[in-house]
Length: 248
Image 1 (cartoon, one colour):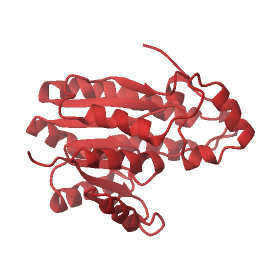
Image 2 (cartoon, helix red, strand yellow; image 1 turned 45 degrees about the vertical axis):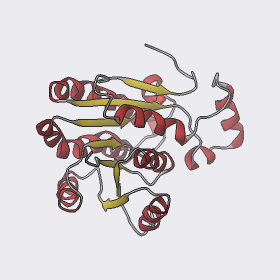
Image 3 (spheres, helix red, strand yellow; image 1 turned 90 degrees about the horizontal axis):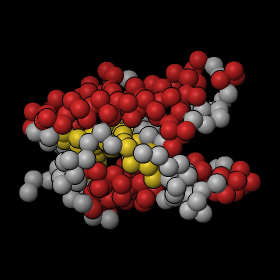
């Protein structure tokens, strides 16, 4: 069987790294995007995964810049081949109440978290359709489902990602291409570790599971949705939040 190529944007983060690890363990060739190779120490990141037996590499790209994504896609094709699996992980937060939020805080989050998914996916979706196979997973958030104080920008972007997913699923289904969303709740990463302890304890108290999730929890969901056998799961949102928010 031909090894499938998986591109994970922002794959060097806590959740992204575990997604890369689990997709690599499933036999995928792994490519991640990075914004600043030196600052992110991306070659060491890739070397660490290779030491675990994961076929991993990287390309530089600002996902908020469409022209950069065009060039990135050309580099990926020339160096590695065609992308069969795409996971849009790259995202940032710039939290503030709307009445105190400046335009740069709004647009930076929208441009990376939402426009970035368009900029990257649009480079590879035609090829997936032509080959009759593709798996796209967009990483949203429980806060895109519920909203959150101080996150009008982030909540809007993450909710928009699932709208993007549902429409893309309808377009891709006749051609063997799936698009699904994974919506993490609160996950144990460096970002949540930076939350003040009292605030973190208050958050955990609201989670029926009694604790935050792990990057492995998210990666397992992504691995499930990107499997070759997952072709009939399309346009779904898979919440991974410890029952913090339940809906259907």
